Image (cartoon, rainbow, N blue to C red; front, side, top):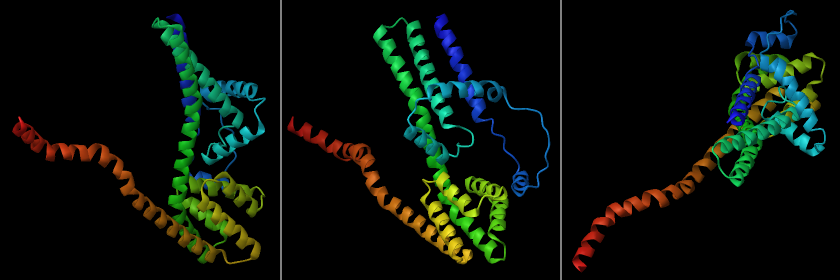
Length: 303
């Protein structure tokens, strides 16, 4: 019993730490973010008001991660970095920290389940099986959560991209430069695309070429094919000296057409997906209601 209590307490502390780390990102006001992108923010010395999980447990996790992932293959690290970038977590998590989190969570869940079933006086085989199940859950759950977050982020980008392109088109055709049009998007829009364009503005303000900043934008959001196509068109237009307004307008029309085609494809798949619940759940009930009385009468007549 003391072992189970200790393991449960350690698991609770780790969960509290992870919640604090994930929620430690402070949301800044839009005007503050815009001023920072333009280099107009005031430099102020503030006290370190980060939570305890960020000041104490995050360095511990960092050391533990580097200790465990020192011999990790390079290809695996690149895949982890790509997944974190697709989920929008590359600025908050390093690949080694994320892998260390998976290993730590796997070990803790394994020990926790092993301790709980030891307290229940079960057999050694069952305890080992529960420990293995806990290890697999702790290792696979972060990957599943990361994949779901990346998919949700990709859907948000695809949904808001046409409206953002319309705003960019109107701003450019009204006489604004491309950077000023991006700033207008950051002011008027909210969400993933506004944050990404704000990062592009910050990189351009720091002296990075616009083409490289846009290519990096497409690289960070590689699963979003529509955004990659838009960035490729903008880079090509910048290289060839083509009007950016016309390129943006054509891209917005093409993306809306693709979205309409995706919606039609989903509508065509709907009847096929409906066949499974109809065949296994709806049709048997209908057959019982319609044919049941007739079958009962036939059986009575045969008797």
